[in-house]
Length: 203
Image (cartoon, rainbow, N blue to C red; front, top):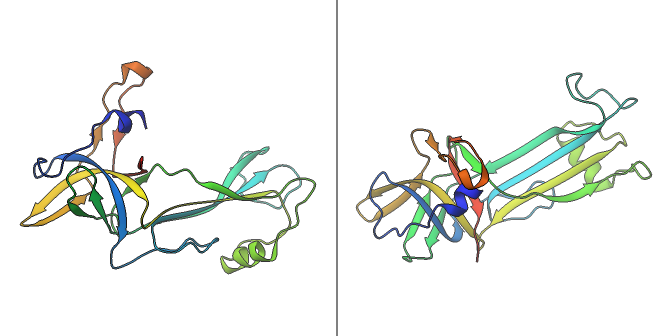
């Protein structure tokens, strides 16, 4: 996030073919939109649903390799799709290829929707049905469900490689790893990034 915040926004009018760009603007859906699986929020370009179980002695077996006395990821749904972004600097509308076959690095904060406690482990009918639809155990236990999404109309920041073909502007996954470089201000060593970075943008 520090690298992303320190990387300046690009002007698509001046950016060159094959250049690593960071573009911030309003997102709009392409031919395909997504819906979150639990809250059923529609017209999304990115959606994730994460289910965590609290591992402790006495619970049903989760995975012997998982640690006890901590939250463990038990199930994950994470999807993104191709969408459009309108660059707030130039006003240019670009296609972002974030769908099938693209590695996406989502820097999205998921919201906690459901958390059962030791005092109340009863699962709601909606959560029970959601679990059963995915062939997951609906037994009463310590669970935490989180969901995150970027909906059409939200401001989003995309970092990827620029591709220009006549009047069509596209942002795609960089073909090679790129490095954040040394961030001495934060005492951080370089990190190799493999994919298209997707993050919420500042309005």
